[in-house]
Amino acid sequence: MAADSVRKFRIGNVEILRIVEWQGPLAPARRLVPDCGPELWKEYEDQLAPAHWDPGADFAMSALQTWVVRSAGRTVVVDTGVGRDRERPGIPLFHRRPGDLPGQLRQAGVDPGEVDLVVNTHIHADHVGWNTHDVDGEWVPAFPRARYLLPAADDRHFGPEGGYGGGTRVDDRLLYEDSVAPVHRAGQAVLWEDGHRIDEHLVLEPAPGHTPGSSVLRVASGGERAVFVGDLLHSPVQILHPECNSCFCLDPRQAAVSRRRILERAAAERELVIPAHFAGAGAVEVRKARGGFTLHRWAA
Picture 1 (tube, rainbow, N blue to C red):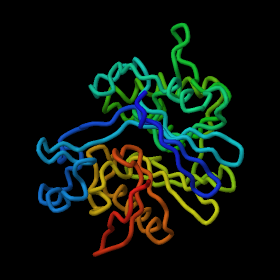
Picture 2 (picture 1 turned 180 degrees about the vertical axis):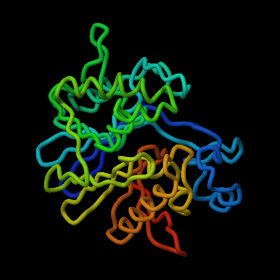
Picture 3 (picture 1 turned 60 degrees about the horizontal axis):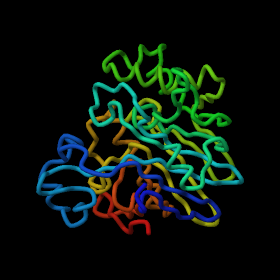
């Protein structure tokens, strides 16, 4: 594990660990965020390159990562990455990856057997993959004592009730069956809707659009604040122009509404914004400016 693959900081009395599995070029910039034309990437090159955009190759830079939150005596894992040896034929980067998140967690001092809660901000392949692992040919929960907090709207949409995402992508059925259904069978799934308070510092709130159940996790402690925004943001260019959606947003109009609402609050309340896939420092403070937002300060 690379020396910089684990980083730690605090929000008041809440400790946050960032576990990075991979960082690098993800996709052509305007394929990832098709709503943002080349002039926007060029205009903000000094803020996007090199951590978030490679101008020469015109590729957006990204990260696969998991966050660990220690709050009120409990250990919470936020999003569980891609998993190992998963069949994901529609996404070559994720297909049969050889990752080892449990090993990375142990090296960071986090025993998977002692994790209390797992939060999936939404049900996509790179957010639920290590919900489970293979034991003697059977997918079982990778965090044996944890409750898994799943947005009910996503569970309906991506599960059999919704035809596994309407049957538009074969990967949706595969990921539900190997990474979500086993958690239900084990009795460890907790479906929530309209909001869910975890403890005095942590609360889950809906932010639909990217998926029907897309959500954010707010942190407030000791006068400091942060918000895990999942895939509301794939690139900082979407902070600078929040009307720009990623190619993965199922309801682009709703995603843009949720994105602006969350960013408005983050700017007003000085919340540190923590997206699922930002490379570089991984988290940023934002401020309002010119009808949009600016990148005020990156996390140390």
